[in-house]
Image 1: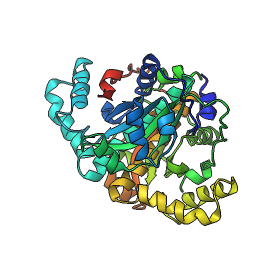
Image 2: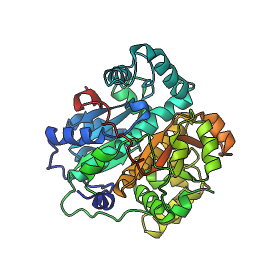
Image 3: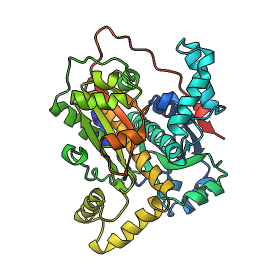
Image 4: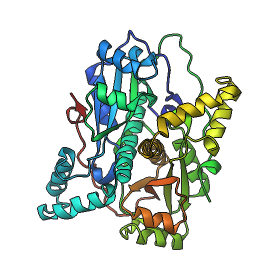
Length: 208
Length: 208
């Protein structure tokens, strides 16, 4: 799809068709398209949990202001932002470093320098680790939602939920923050799609 | 541009053509396209500072591991994530609420409920405010970088800089975190663009 069309068509819809699913192959394509987003040192500090099961979605809905879209959408993704994604031993970081070595961009003995740099930038405080995890998860989530539009689906990002209760209910390890849930599916027949809300203009966004 | 092409062509390039500028009208179009991103309750807790001045870019480069792209790119954007964007009195929040009322979605007397909700979700701790600001800035930054690709430009997001020193040098108010700088411009003639690095597959991203 043309990017201009995606910009206009991507709306956070409120009513999903509960009778129209998203099959595994399509979901895989959307997630892998989304994963083409850039990230800090390519560390990709994010994971997803996929909710399709009606009982699990019902449990999630209870902790998310009882929003009907949580159960109506065929798929709800829980985005997990990894606050430990800069640490030596983190599975993804280790794969990234191996990839740098394999591509000839780094020598194996540069690992100490590499993990020292990521620790200095992202691990110097809880504040910096939280920023690291959430900004990168935001890049990925936006890429994923545009990819869903490109594949003809609708989405709705939600962060109106009880964060602590959701972590406990679904046994989410403490290293992860949950920046948002993303409902994915098809528009309910007959449901109205409202125009995009107000956005900051160039002059409002840019500070002197 | 086709979204598929954008996904492939968007690369964090290292070499910008210092002789080819990005004029104001084009930059405005890219930023306003980027601003079509969704955000928590449409609060859009982000601002930009635009760096074009060679002396300012030189000062920024010194605090960013001396990366040549900071001065070679005609434009460097500093993304500012507003950790106070959920507070009553915040300029953007007030405009968003007024917009809800004007669109008929809320009554003026629902303001207390609205700011109570945003404070409960995003202002309950420094941790939640940091997540709020950075995830939304990430959504915006990704949308902006894809918009730049759509308009035929290249970008490079950078968060390898001395955060505290940059805030001090450029008098950034404490309410803002700086998730990244984004260099924007044209590819330097003859510069090589490397293929995208390794990305997590569906099976690697999705947790059981």
